[in-house]
Length: 104
Length: 159
Image (tube, rainbow over the protein chains, first blue to last red):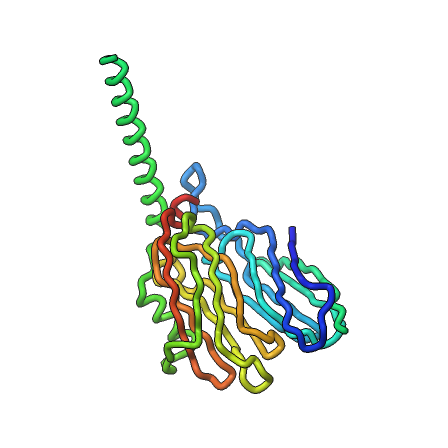
């Protein structure tokens, strides 16, 4: 499950706030289950946000990022274009979501 | 009355004993697979990322709650003073812990398109500590700031 908070419209030059959250256990690899066996690490390694073909924000995650990684960052609105949010886990699986930003 | 009071005392002691033993097991199982990092590990991580370049104090503001009840999810905000223009912007922000099993918590890449160097996320903290944040500017200079929080329940221990 992905949750995005992004404005639908903005004026050119305006700085907008973007929020992105994905449901993921971010298993550290340091915990043990009830049988005492180590629960293998399972984390999202990378987050990327692109807007109008430019990478505006990227994150590399380590096990120190909490479960259900949540990010807030900013972007400068330039013209009407898609904002794409994508996450890639340690196995290469990728999830993404898009939002259209209309700039007037 | 007398018997009732005795019974209550015994129950309390048992509860206390159970709590203490559970805590001991939990701490033991966490320490076994991974030792805590030390402030030297955070310094080492900074050296691996940025070499021996000088790090200036300032321009980086780290926002943390004074007390974090749950070390598994602590909100952290980072603001870097920068015009975020085409020729003067924040290139990278790294969040480091002197106490977690891995010193590096996250690395963020920004650019002039971000407009504002103001980010936030949620991190795990294995105990009370001072997080260190290093920002790399487009001109190659490094700036750092710190933020502390008192963690009542450390991450990993409570799973």
